[in-house]
Amino acid sequence: MVNVGIIGAGRIGKVHVESICTQVPNAKVKMLADPFMTDATAEWAKNMGVEAVTKDYKEILADPDIDAVLICSSTDTHSPISVEAIKAGKHVFCEKPIDHDVKKIQDVIDALKDSNVKYQVGFNRRFDHNFEAVQQAVVAGKVGDIHVIKVTSRDPEPPCAEYVKVSGGMFLDMTIHDFDLVRFLAGCNAEEVYVEAAVLVDPAIGEAGDVDTAVITLKMENGAIAVIDNSRKAVYGYDQRAEVFGSKGMVATGNDSASMAVISNENGVTGEKPLYFFLERYMAAYAKEVKCFIKAIEEDTDTPLGVMDGLQPVLMGLAAKKSLEEHRPVKISEITM
Image 1 (cartoon, rainbow, N blue to C red):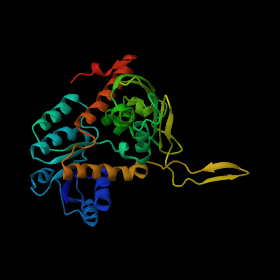
Image 2: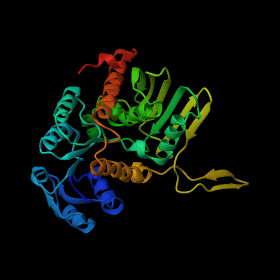
Image 3: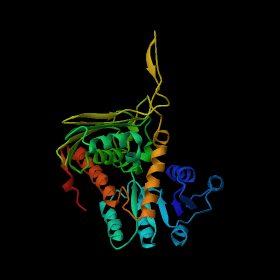
Image 4: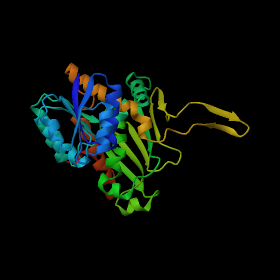
């Protein structure tokens, strides 16, 4: 049994509490920390089976019985808490992104160099059953040499402007998942990024200094071309699709829905809309990624997504921002540590 502490009791922290308590039998949430811990959250945690709650995450780091921590706090705390946890000898699962500043990610890389700590970054889409099937088909050679990768990622509704102001922008908040997915499907890093983007959904997002609609083109190290299309608002639900086209064929996956039933009658042919948001679509993926993290601890193996996998999508996101600002393709090598 691996004892874990979870830092952050917001939406994603609660997702991990629930998934571990209900779907990860060889892990136990010993403590949950949040500076804004409320009586209601504490009661909820107790009912889920969490042993203790605190407002000070340092209690988790100081507890000798806690083997690993999940960092689910605000983005600006991810890298400093990562370094603290590594120095405390705790294995670390860190929600994306490690940081928006590559120099602070380097601090985490440096802290890991002389440690035996396992470090995993929370890019859950790699653990989705649909995207795993696409990647496995590619690895098995069923599509041959990769020529084109297409990823569609559209949220059902936009975030509020106040969130946008602190999010790091769409490329580091939303598209960062798609950047990691492209790397996963291609089996390599990107070399160059080019962006066309606009504010077409909510003027308040533009006023906050961000965009809400984008098409991103990437040149990959293996020669493939990848295309990501993003929107902050798809009125029909959470649109998450991927396709890999190659010299021997194509593999593609559509959206999950409540059922695959299709009604055909005189009024037309209709089916279910996609599952509405990421909690419905990816709950099983959240549990699977933590299972893999716990397995790496128990078996002393590498985690499936290490610190360098956390770095690359941030570099891609920063290159995308630079491309939009300067209206040109930007090489990943231009984004320096």
